[in-house]
Amino acid sequence: MELLFEKSRSGRGCDLLPPLDVPPAHLMEGMGRETPLDLPELSEVDLSRHYSALERRAHGVNNGFYPLGSCTMKYNPKLHEELAALPGFTGVHPSQSPETVQGCLKVLRLAEELLCEITGMAAMTFQPAAGAHGEFTALLMVKKYHLDRGEAGRTKILVPDSAHGTNPASAAMCGFTVVNVPSNPQGGVDLEALRAAAGPDTAALMLTNPNTLGLFDPNILEITQIVHDAGGLCYYDGANLNAVMGVARPGDMGFDLVHLNLHKTFSTPHGGGGPGSGPVGCKDFLRDLLPAGHVEEGPDGLELRDPAGTIGSVKAFYGNFTVVVKALAYILTLGVEGIPQAAQGAVLNANYLREQLRGTYDIAYGDGPCMHEFVLTLEKLKKETGVSALDVAKALVDQGIHPPTMYFPLIVEEALMFEPTETESRETLDQAAEVLKAIRAQADTDPAALHAAPVTTPIGRPDEVQAARHPVLRYRPPEVRP
Ligand SMILES: *Cc1c(COP(=O)(O)O)cnc(C)c1O
Image (cartoon, rainbow, N blue to C red; front, side, top):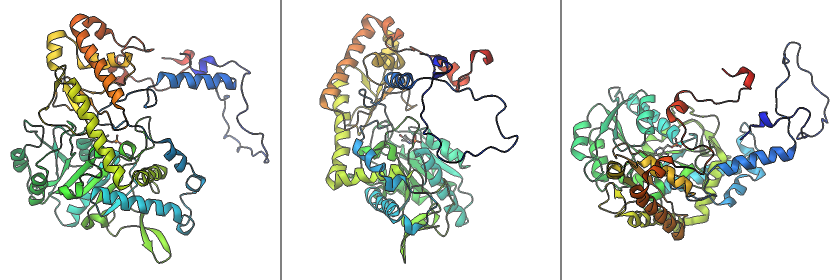
C-alpha cells in the first residue's frame, strides 16, 4: 500500500484549517525553517480513502473474535465514549482551581470509592497511565514503606514463574532484586518454595490471581500469610480482574496493594497505544504513601492534597482522566448485579470454549475449571506433525480470528492462551471451536498449508528478528534511504 507521501501530488490539497481571523504573528528572525516542510499533498477524498483502507487492514473487536489472552479484548459500550467526550470533561484545563472543577473531582472521588469497594482497598490513585506503570507506582510505595520503617534490607520481590513479564520488569526498574517462585504441578504457587524464599529481605510478593494460566490459586490466604509473617507486603496484579470483579476481592485475599487495568476490565479498549489507566489501590496503613494530588474532602468541597508521606508524582496532573470517566460510567451502568455477572460470563465463556477443544488440543493444567482464560499446549502436536503454536495462530488470521497470545506463559511449551471475554456470543465461540478443530485436522493432512499461513493478509510472516532489531519507524523518501 502506498504511503501518503507516495500518493502526494504537488498542488493538490484540501483546506482543513479555517481562514485566519486574527492578525498573523511572525516568527523571530532565525527561528524559521531553512527548507520548506515536506508534507504530502492530497485531496480530502484521497486522504479519507487512505485511512479507511488502513482501518480495513487492522483487526479490532469490531471486526471479529479477538481472544488475545491476558489482554481482555472485550467490547466496550460506545455510550461511555460519548459520556467521556462531554464538554464538561474535555473542556477543562488541568491547572484550573479545584472550586471550578468540582464535577471532575467528584468523578475521581466516586470512581475511587467504587473501585475500592470492588477491590477491598481503602484508597486509590488514578495517576498511573497503564498496568505496568501502576506496578511501578505500587512498588515505589512498597520501597518507601520499608525505608520509612528503617528496613532498608528488604530488597527482594517474590514473583511466581507464571507472572506477566511486566512484574519482574517493574521490580527491577524500582531497584529490587527479583526472586522467582516456581509453580506447583496444579499451576499455583509452590508453598514450600515460597516459604523458603520469604524472609527478612523480602519487600513484597507480586501475584496475579487468577494467574496467567487462568487458574485461581486455592491457597491464596496461606500465600499472603506466609509473606506477611516474613514482614513483606502483598501486591495484587489486578489486570485479570475481569474474572473476579464483584465476586472476590484482593483485599479479602490478604493483599495490601493492587493495580487495575481500566483499559482491560472497565470499558476502555486495550491496545492501539492508549490512553490507558492503571490505578493503584492500597489498604489504609499505606494511604499516606500514595502519589501527590489525591482527591479529598475539604472545608469548601473536594480538593487535591499531597498525602503526608507521598512518593511524589508519577504522572502529570490526574492521569488519563477520561478513562476514569468511562470506568465510572461502566460501573454505574452495570451496578452491583451487573459487575459480578460480567465476571461470571467471562468465566463461563472461557470454560465453554475450553471444553469444546478438549480432546482436540491438549490443555495445560486442565484438570479443574479455569477462570477467564485458558492455555493450550501444542508441544505434542508439534512433535507429531511439525505444526507449531505459531502456525495455528497464523492460520486463525485467515479465518478472521485474531490470534491468541502465543508462547506465554513461559512455563508452558508451545502455548496458546485464549481469553474469550463475556461479550462474545455462544455462536462466536462455537464457530471459533469449529475453526480450531478444522486447523487441527489440517495439521495431519496438509501441514505445509499451515506453515504458509496467513495467505489473506498483505504481509504473511514478517522477519520478526529483523523487525525487532532493526525497526523502520518512520518514512524516508527514497533519495535519503540508507
Ligand atoms: C496487561 C497486563 C499487565 C500490564 O498492563 P499494561 O497496561 O499493558 O502495562 C500486567 N499484568 C497482567 C497480568 C496483565 O495481563
